[in-house]
Length: 216
Ligand SMILES: Cc1cc2nc3c(=O)[nH]c(=O)nc-3n(C[C@H](O)[C@H](O)[C@H](O)COP(=O)(O)O)c2cc1C
Image (cartoon, rainbow, N blue to C red):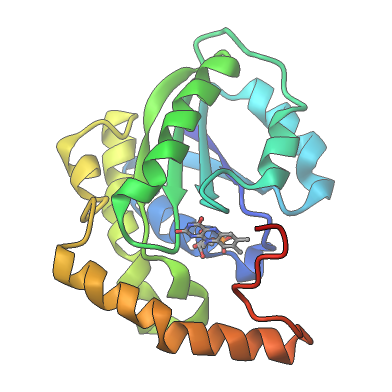
């Protein structure tokens, strides 16, 4: 199998968490002879080649971060340049995000299933996982600890050609945190995190409170 992989993050490759995830995923993917080619949506100079590759490949995998609960605008801009294929092309997605609870990625996942149909491709599932904020802040072993689990998912995709197995579903982790964790996180948001964000805003020259609601 040969797979066209598109990194849908607007962040350039060097700073993209999705790219680091793909690094591990493709390690597992290629163990049994599967090959791939990868393009970056963040590099508009690749768009023509990426579009050509999209029309010439019958296995497509789009890996993307969740941006404001949905898919990045730049990826959408690229997708809008594509015509529906309707030729049996299979498409799968890796949807990853910063916050850890699976539930907050489900709306994006549902959208990707619709997107597959709009592109005239057969939907092969979405690998869903959050808790990836920190990948870009780490290097070496610390980064590997977060990204390494994707290697097994690469093996799984290369074997099954989809993300429908129980192992892929379990990979998401907790759908919702237990009540006590939500309580602690909520408390942190209202206290420590609020102060921290206010300081960041102040440093950026913001003169109003961060919860200022001019239209309410
Ligand atoms: C503008 C922006 C919006 C984001 N929105 C969300 C969000 O709604 N939910 C979430 O869990 N993470 C969100 N994140 C975090 C990213 O999904 C996460 O850091 C991801 O790993 C980034 O991947 P990338 O570096 O390849 O772009 C957002 C990040 C940015 C920069």
